[in-house]
Length: 432
Image (cartoon, one colour):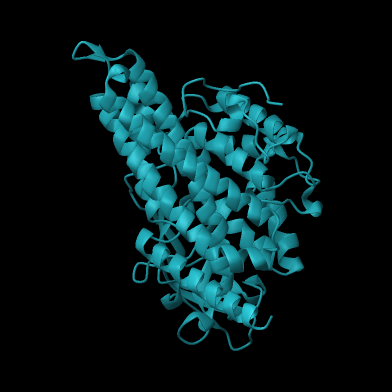
């Protein structure tokens, strides 16, 4: 039995389950969330992206509106919402015990479709999980109510000018004061998304010796000595990319996340969801671009016939479609596996898989964006009008390839992780 079609009828503009075809992954609450978020974003944010880009930011009152609508809790939670968060509103009235990884997927799919609004949540989606998963209860009780209610904002500060994806060798230091009550933080972080408007910085710091064992995670409030300045990127201003400088910032020792020396592992666990979330963005960006390019190809005439009537154009769409649908299927499989594995097993078994999936998201996104620009012609290079969404996606594709681990680094990680699991499996089989 299939469900009624939903959304655009243009080929590949929507995931297959939106079109009414059966799927083992989605149930009534996923359809309820999809319908609600699409209607809500269209009602509140339709055609606002260009205006916000011109202003250089999303207005502050919009964030409060999102908090009241129940967006912040599921964004901070990811694939499961803790029972103790049930006193906060949750979008579409979904019960916290119902929420799963596919709700997370659907939510981001629709938020990305909604335009620039998705950009204001990036700090929350990557900065809140370490607080939820690894911080002590006292710190959680103090900070979580502030960020889940929208009163305060958080971001993740890992990357540095000198080490990039080489997290093991970061140099920002956090030295304990003689009375052990504070850390004094010095160093720099670069390309920190949402940093310009954040109140808290979930920061990887060096509290010990060289290598991964010397890294800890420290939640740093916007205290004296913490300075931020904007970084202009090709993707635009709404993500508020930031250069952060710490100059003798005095942070209470109670703001340490977990134990000293655990920061590298905490960072790696956090990367898995961040990388999956990048793929969510890539998929909807591809579908938006294909939708607009197909709409154009159905009406644009060149050389005496519509673009879609020309075999070379149909060839382009066919190649885009096979890659996007394959990426969708792989993404759903990984979401399903994460849903049925413990956090520890998910990190152990799927760290390399998620790295390769994120790479594929970037490669497919780049390919689709480039092909759609060629189909749109000059419109695909124009920030307004029929080609605006294609142009915006084309401009943003480096953000699918570099953040969360660059392409080459993640391919190597994926192979190394696969080899490690293979050796473990071989040893286990030898004992049988």
